Image (cartoon, rainbow, N blue to C red; front, side):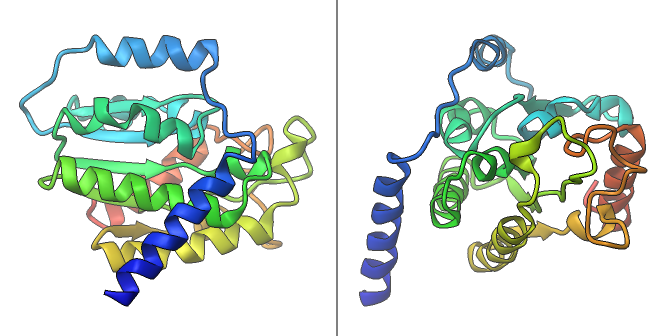
Length: 222
């Protein structure tokens, strides 16, 4: 009981702290995408949903895996708070699997790691409560590469990214999710996002998505 009270207290504290930071997510693009998602009929064939920000949004997942059951629920610029706001559209579909990656935009905006983790806790809890049939795969936040200057706020965040990833791995074990480490294989020999997989230091090119695909297939997750 004491552990539950402590965990609840930490969560409430982190949520209150979140209000002190820029966690806005309601851009025009966000609303365009979310209203579109809400108008798409549910499917009864065991959907597989990739959920996240622009790194998810960019990919042509169903074609990449040659699987029409795969749906893309990435929204460019999204943050953990944005996922929480639109999560019901995903859980109402009762998908067979969700592959989640979110957090790099939170880090770029200076949202504390504790708040990001608290939001992740809520995301996981809500998915498990609303759609217990769904297998949830928590994917690591990817590295970035500061040789590129286009996304300066996202650079030099290695300590935060690795800290959040370590805690996500622990949280996944605690909550019965599967943690997928994409970070290591995306790094070059100095720990940056390999220039073989990016052309702006943040987002992936086709080669990067092939690495991602290979990891999921090798682990027999898809």
